[in-house]
Image 1 (cartoon, rainbow, N blue to C red):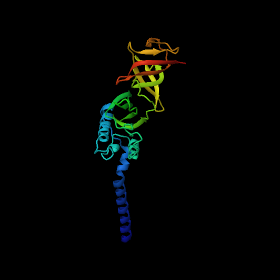
Image 2 (cartoon, one colour; image 1 turned 135 degrees about the horizontal axis):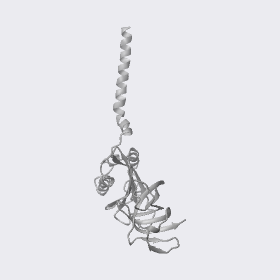
Image 3 (cartoon, rainbow, N blue to C red; image 1 turned 30 degrees about the vertical axis):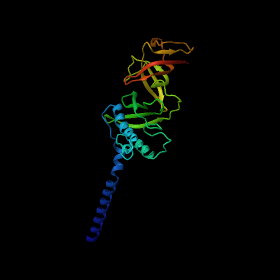
Image 4 (cartoon, rainbow, N blue to C red; image 1 turned 180 degrees about the horizontal axis):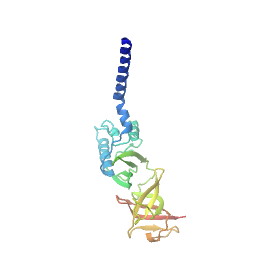
Length: 251
């Protein structure tokens, strides 16, 4: 009986040791699936803090963003980290998975596309106009902070750089609910096959509207009828879009 108890005790100890070893060697994977590091900084600062070291490494003759561990930065989502790590060693003829350029730019411009309570999108482009690739970074809110969930590359379909930093087709609406401000007109548009993105519109005496009949006049937002289908061209700022031109498409 005593020998049987010793055997049972030994089996229990082995089971506990095995379970402990499994947790020790796999705790990284377990926690990686449960925890996401976030930053309390402004989303545009988070993007700058990630993109500047990546650009510096590509510009350096002796550094590499992958060897520096930037592709595995904890501020990135697990899915984004995996995608960047899988892209290591990609052909030089393909766009860089972070900068979305086939050539390393001398500098980058970073603009806010929109900022909602739980989601923000940031646009990163090259300061060199001939490099037309665009990186759209989606940041999600989590535990009071932000993390980079996705990087979407626009492959530079256009033969010439865009005239303005914001060019989207959607619907003009003013009857919006908080946190959107109903004193401003908004463009509701689709981005990366996701509907419901919005951007507030700011008009000036330089904002021109092309009417459905082809005529062009200074925009008078008081005459807009919602929801009006339109293409908005303008400059993206942290507050919204400074409208330069709107093409009203009619029905």
